[in-house]
Amino acid sequence: MARPDPGETGATVILEVFRYLPDDEWDPRFQGYEVPYHSDWVILDALNHIRNWIDPTLSFRWSCRMGVCGSCGMMVNGEPKLTCEGFLSEYYPDPIRVEPLAYFPVVKDLVINLDDFMAKLPAVKSWLIPQDPKPLSEGEYLQSPAELAQYKRFSMCINCMLCYSACPVYGLDSSFVGPAALALAHRYNLDSRDGGQRDRAEAVMSHEGIWECTYVGDCTRVCPKDVDPAGAIQMAKLSYATDWVRSVLLPGRKRR
Amino acid sequence: MTSPYRSTDPLWWLLFSAGGVVAAFLFPVTVVLTGIAIPAGWLTEESLLALVRHPLARLYLFVLISLPLFHWAHRFRYALVDLGLGSLGRQKVLFYGAAGLGTLLAGWLLIRL
Amino acid sequence: MNREHLRVLPADWWLRKRSYSFFMMRELTSLAVAAYAVFLLALVATAAEAGSFTRFFEWLRHPVSVGLHLVALSMVLFHSITWIKLMPESLVVWRGEERIPGRLIAAGGFAGWIVVSVLVAFLALR
Image 1 (tube, chains in turn orange, yellow, blue):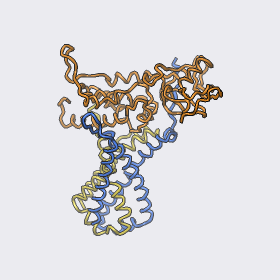
Image 2 (tube, each protein chain N blue to C red):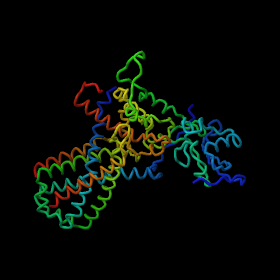
Image 3 (tube, chains in turn blue, purple, cyan):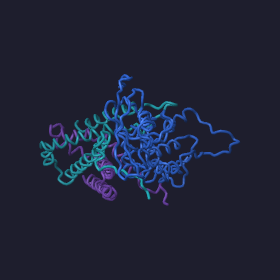
Image 4 (cartoon, rainbow over the protein chains, first blue to last red):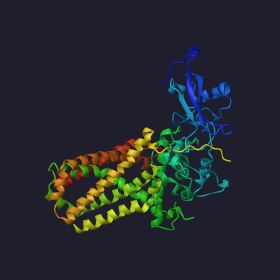
């Protein structure tokens, strides 16, 4: 879908950018910017061009510009996307609508408040809770490649929150723990060194946890790192449901 | 704070899943039997009457009535919440109760057959 | 004072994106599932109370009944196909370091579906 670089032809593309400037005005609006079109530019390049040459008041987050930091997520034509991974050529010559990530409060322009997500990461205890803890002097925890493979996919999350912006359940209820946090919890539950499934139950097995997910599946569709959070949540539902049956039939028996 | 293991959420999800499997694997052929085979004359009154009295057929019918009702109850509840009718979707008793009633009725009728 | 701008999910959110509409249609197949379960309950009630299927069969031969059955069949098939396709997401199978592709598990599911359907039809119609 890439078109040849027009070079000196002066081709341009319009970006319709969401503006919200609470210091000056209450109502958000869209502002159109005409940006030079280059076939090797991504939307982030266009945004930086706007900021550097057209309108220095535009605010947005970005960092690595290569799809590993998770900072530059925004809504592009209504779809959550990493703006460093969306090429202008995918949209040219049509105008491109850029908005802040959906379902998060907007602080200014394209910058969202992500406190809710940041609170959910520790809430699901997204760290290793060793099954058989041992002191450092006894050496490292060993893990085979097969054991690593079990959870590796779910460890690739870059916390970009595109999945939250794709999830209508989160859009309807921000107390929903959400795709990334639940997938991360499952990553640790699957880790052979970990024994914390029941410790994570408080957040993951709560009514706002895995049970609120209705398997829309859009989170997996938009994930830039192919984590498949929807799959992780479905696995977690089965895992926690069987664990629940175990806890009902054999109360008092500690899991694992 | 009560332990999450005391909640009934996993139970309703398990029933939803079981009902989903039953409906997925067994409903299409059963719909074809009642909707096409009977009008076409491939299944007569007498043979169906004899069939439903068979203990395995009674079990089949019980499973095909009870579990899919629980599947509907769970899925439709959440669909109502997703459609913005959240207050309706939060009335668990309405949905699981209806499925439970259907289950009891099916069991009672099938025993009496 | 909190000056953050809050955007509300529109009530017709599920009509605005194809993936969302597909999801909602899939969920609403549960209505057809419940309707047919109730129909089976009526079938059982007829056998238990009346002891005869004459009136019931007359109704089943009516074009409206056939029409309703075809509508139910399409919704129930939609449920079956989406359900079996999604089964591999929760039933993950490993062989060493490789995960057995979901497509294969789904294919197994579809094969099992056909086998079970043929078996039921055979037992009912012989």
